[in-house]
Image (cartoon, rainbow, N blue to C red):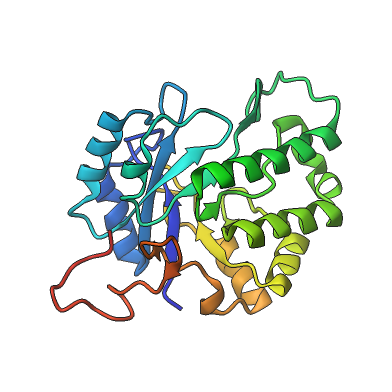
Length: 255
């Protein structure tokens, strides 16, 4: 299997590395890599056409897949035309309304309502943005994370898998967050959902760190055809990466 880390960040959002440094880490490991900096509202995120155009230009001559992690809980002000220049798009939920999932002081009194709102947001944004990968599926507000296994039960997993099939997005097996849960992955695999591997790496110690993702792939015997390949065709369908399995005679690189 050709290993691809499709979820990394650089100095263009909240990462600590230059894109070239991410490439060097991937090359040393023998991996292919996608750079997917954050897009949406917030001080560290890309959220204008000018910023995004500059970002794409910085990746253009590098051997990477060009991507973006859309912050689904915020407004994305980047034109669809520019987003479509990416090899694929990631959707990630980090907030719902005023509830910031990383706020340790946030009051969360109705876990079931949060999980229902999470699914509703994923569906709404899948319709709007047509992203190809859902990042860290099942990421919850900080105070709920210790009980995630109980909160994200079989019914919730079935509903998430239904959305992945309906809107044709892959579920990321996240090494950083160890999400989604094992049972959710089993349900998704049996249903024919595709997966992607993601480190969600932000620095030298975490970029292309895919230990958890690869352990899950090996344990469940997930075949390469069940892994999102890193590129999509013009109509949005995922296609085999032509620069890997079928090298282009022009000698181009992914992205």
